[in-house]
Length: 276
Image (cartoon, rainbow, N blue to C red; front, top):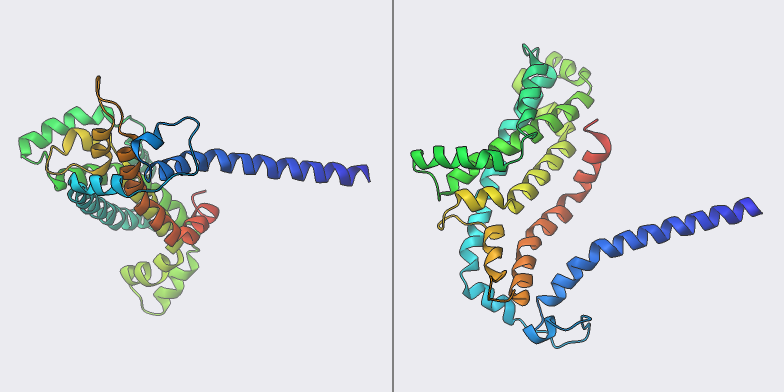
């Protein structure tokens, strides 16, 4: 009887800890969401009021500030970088997994080494090179940089997913007359679909949210949403415009939340079954 009571208490404590962790994780997001519908006078009140008259004023002001063009910049850069990163990284990972690549381990470590160094180290050299090429302030500059950063993640994760796919299905496809490319595209790749979804969403989240390199390389014409958010932070004399900052933050967060909800099943399967 005592053992049963102890187990129930332990289970209750575990559920309480989970509920507390979820509450602490959701609380900042809830505050931002509510603040985006508040007038400046309501946002400044402490403690925050849950009962208030909602308004769309913050969202309308954000749209009037040219937010739509910056949103388009983020969409173009993110889709281009993610598509090319996954399109280049997945076949490369398949090659490392299935083919006898000379010095494969050394090459993989070299690829991964790009993730060891903080991005700020690359900012100045990349800026100098892109200035000489006349690419600073263009979508192409950001896309190329994000491809270089996303590729190590895609290659390493997808190699582990392809390693988990039995080589017997390659042999079976070869017996049926499939060449190497057909075996990859029609047999192995569908078996690793969860891994593709996993690396795609991770690349999407990083590219969409990246701030530092976008600040240095985007100029004014190709500024993405994370850079634009800083416009509402105020300055030495100007106060933080919490309503506008919250509304713009919701706009930035919404695509990530929507994409994650659409593919969460594959992402969960990817994290649970691959990348060992």
